[in-house]
Length: 132
Image 1 (cartoon, rainbow, N blue to C red):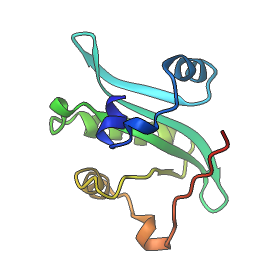
Image 2: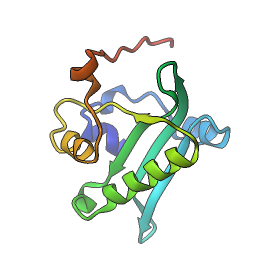
Image 3: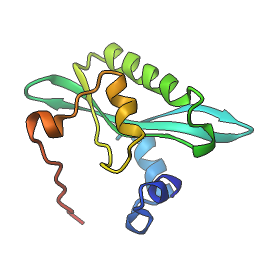
Image 4: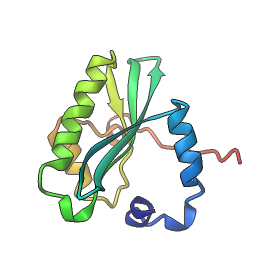
């Protein structure tokens, strides 16, 4: 709920902790915990592997989140480097992800590391169709 609150979407959370645990155990997505401090998670990344007809295999990064009091201390950078190394090791041609347009710290974080904004470059729009 902490991430959803940060993203101003807490009222939209439908996923439950048991469902998340079940899907993780079933291998439906991968989650990496950067590290813990005093038994508490301070950052995590959640991702899945998918395919793109143009690029081939890719990693879709659903979330890269660092708790507020640990930001600016290299935690996100360490996680990013791990994600890039993992994507390379798994044969991914690229990583894709979306960033909320108001998140003015995240966008430069990714661009500084070489990510391109496909919204501007390719005119792509992100769409969602709710099945449930």
